[in-house]
Image (tube, rainbow, N blue to C red):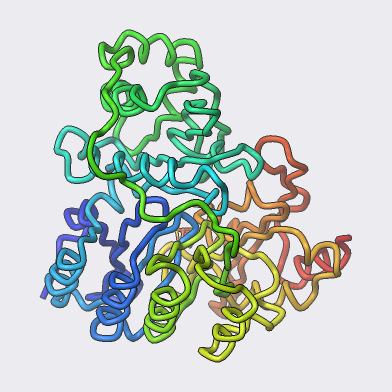
Length: 425
Ligand code: SF4
């Protein structure tokens, strides 16, 4: 059976390194899913994805190694759970990410993420974009996530600062501030105005940052401002609230480390059952590829229960904050075995560097966002040996808290990278 992989992208599907197999990415607004949905995804992963799933750095869930002929059954199963993968790949508005799930402002952020997903997912006006379009919402700017979005929204009081035209990949560029204190009711029409300008002015295969480079920030700002939608204000949605996760309670929040976002289907099912008892029936996938919930009972008792179901989180690998893309383990673009390398790096970290936030990407697409981690590793290429062997080369990044990280060292072999890591801190 052959597949039109390019046409399938809009359905959130990419081909994998082995012909006939696919990755399917599930959109979760602000990373939130219910225990029922968690169990359902666990069941689909057991039946169709070799019993495993991947938590992404944008708070989505990927199913890998799905056979092409099983894709309709997986899509149908997701629809029955109220979930979709539409627009999770290809030229579309991707899943709305959030890195502030533990903050008091998260209910407001989750509501907006759900409204944005409803507005832009499966909406023909906003599909067939020149390339991907990423939106992220944050309750503060400290972790720099807003800098790498096409539209990054930072909550300020009752409104949002709107940053645009950021992105990583081969030509990373930090977002710039388009407008401050934008009211909730203006966010959707303003993003529509940005999308109209993007569709009209970016060539195929280019992101909004390309338009900003070509026209300059002021040129892009002027074009957006000329769109009628840019000055519209929608009424706030009426009816039941959109958010499912309440603000953190007195019992606090529990984050369950998942190394590299690699979780078994059975593991997700156990966490979903746990969330039913301890998290009000809701979980979140975090931007650090972990699972979190807002506790509804005593935290010490919950942690003991969590250890009993296999999530004690005591291994060294789980204790270092390390975002890891699938790399060549599962991705066609991958140049390095990212998870294996991350384990080697962790074994070589001193205590100071071990307390920092790390990220590793298997190619220059930067899916693990190494430029906004404290320390980042990018696989920059491979060198082919005379015997046909392929040795990856790496760049080591450092971010001192301002903007995107800078390259500290480049063209490192694996051994040179580990030596450099050893000397940190
Ligand atoms: S950074 Fe490269 S290797 Fe890693 S998931 Fe993205 S495209 Fe694949």
